[in-house]
Image (cartoon, rainbow, N blue to C red; front, side):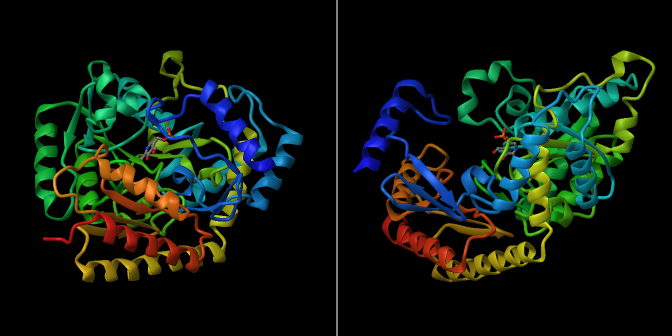
Length: 435
Ligand SMILES: Cc1ncc(COP(=O)(O)O)c(C=O)c1O
C-alpha cells in the first residue's frame, strides 16, 4: 500500500517536471518506476520483477548493484571525486589508459577521455579531420555506412544514416558520403561505392560500427568484408574510425569487435559498457601517428576539445573495476555460455521457419519479425511487442520489427530460457508464418 502510494506520487511528479528521451510525451504511457535492481533483474514499487534483457540501453554489462564497482566508486569519491583534466592528472585516469591499451588492438597508442558515446564519436571525427588540417592537407569528406547510428550530437547525427528522427536537423547536418553495408553478398557493391568516393573526393575518414549496426536494426555483416573496406581506405589515406560504443567490452564475445578483424582502425570510440553501466564515461583512442600530428610549437595545432567531466576520476575508478571483472575467467566463461545458448536458440528458430530472419554475434541475438507490409522503427508492431514483453516481465525494446537480446553477462541460463519462451510466444501471437 505504502509502495503504491510512493509510486503514484513519483509518477505524478515525473509527469509534471520531467521530459524523457525518445518519448512522445503526449501519447506515452506512464513510465515504469524502478525502485531497485540486482543482477539482471529490476524491481518496481509493487515488487514486480523485470529481466533487463537490453542491459539498460546496452550499458550494464555485469548486472546491477555490482559491489566491486560500487566500492571502487565510493572509495574514489572520498579520495578525489573530480578535478579539471587540462594541466592535471590522477591515478585512475592514467591506470585506466594503461589497462585499455593492454586490451585494445596493438596499433592504438593514446587515450582521450570524454563522457558519452556521441562525444566519443565527435572526438574521433574531429581528430581525423584535424590530423590532415595540421599537416596542411585539405580533405573534406567523411564516409559512413548507410543506416548507421553514431549518436545524438550534430557530428554524430551527420555520420549516422538518414534516420527519420533527425528530420528536423537534416538541413544543418554536414554532408557525408554513404556506402552500402557489406552484408552477405553486398561487399562488391560497397567496395564499388567506396572506390567511386576515393576517385572523386578528398575523404579524410571512414566511420563504421564494426560487425553490427545497433540502432539501425542489429544489422550484422562479416569481419572479412570490413577488413576489405578498411584496407582499401588505409591504402588511400583515409583514416578509419571504429565506433565500438555498442560493440565494445565483450558484446561480440571478444573484448572488442575489432578483435575479429585482421585490419585495424586508426581511431576507436568506446562508451556504454566502459564503466559497467554505472557512471557516464567514454574514450576515443588513436594511433601514435595521429597523436604526433598534433605535436607542434604552433599552438593552433592543439586538439582544442575538452568537457567539464573529462576523465572524471570516479568514472575511471568504476571503469577499472568493471575491466577487472571483464578480464576474469568467470566473465569470459559467461560470454561463451551466452553465445552458445543464443546459438542453440538461433538454430531452433531457423528450423521453425516462423520469423523473417534471425542472426547472432556473440552475446547479441536479433530476431526479425515478419510484418506483412510496414517495416522500420515506427511501425505499430514495435509498440505492441514492447508492451507484450513488459507485461510478461522483461525489458526488450524492439527496433521496429527487430527484437534483440543484449543481456548483462551475469544473466542466468534460466533467465535466458524465460526470455526465449516469451519471444516464442510473441512469434505465435504477432508474426504471420513466413511465406
Ligand atoms: C554505435 C553507437 N555510437 C554512438 C552512440 C551514442 O552513444 P550515447 O548514447 O552514449 O551518446 C550509440 C548509442 O546507442 C551507439 O549505439
